[in-house]
Image (cartoon, one colour):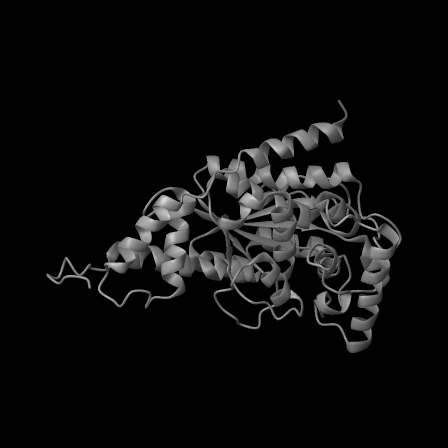
Length: 356
């Protein structure tokens, strides 16, 4: 058996192991919510979230205090085309910043009581740090505007890496996950994935990323168009798409979603790049869908359309476009609020009234 075939089998086994959403517990959570001292439905999305968490975990009020944001880091060969306002050398510098606790996601994770788990799945530099999870598949992808970003075996390996990282964290007691990423050029790869899998035009999918000019934006659209034309990815085969026009950290995040669903854990989706990864995961395994919680609407142009394709509704719109998992970590507070309201509010029965 080839390595590629073995990886295919491992991925299928993980997909087959996804736990079904527990509709009975979701109903019980809604019934409890309707009995609280408030008009039914008046807490809006927080009530929906509480029911979703119950259905995901099979527990009425799950204990989700151990939480982590998985930050996948990798580089992109397409940066050779001048699609970003920053050079690829920023990627390893930012990885060290995550590990030192100085990035925005570290600050917000500390506020939320969450861990930051940084994974090198394809940074184009040698990195060593005691807190870094070194899972490097290759030293960055190839230039997708000239050929495939990676081969199928490498894409599968990156997806399996995400599954493995989540499984390891779950075994250590983490029960709530968020997705984050770092990789200069990854909005270009995400736009290409969105164009193929969500059937958006490159003009719809491509945004300004790190803050490029109008001229650079038009060039970025042409690069995505060329990458799709050169590689002809098969939209019916999400692994083929992520291999040809994707990124290693995007593939890794797709694995995070599958791994979380396999472990019965909710996973909060960050912005545009994390949503592109969620689309890859969803195309691989429809059973992932009920485990996904959309955090925020990014300022990146294609994010709204991508969320619509995913069937997800973001909780907030803050004009953010940083990535790293920053928006997803902020959503941890909404998860905690939903659970605390359901657990701590009095019911009509508690105060001697019938709930009509």
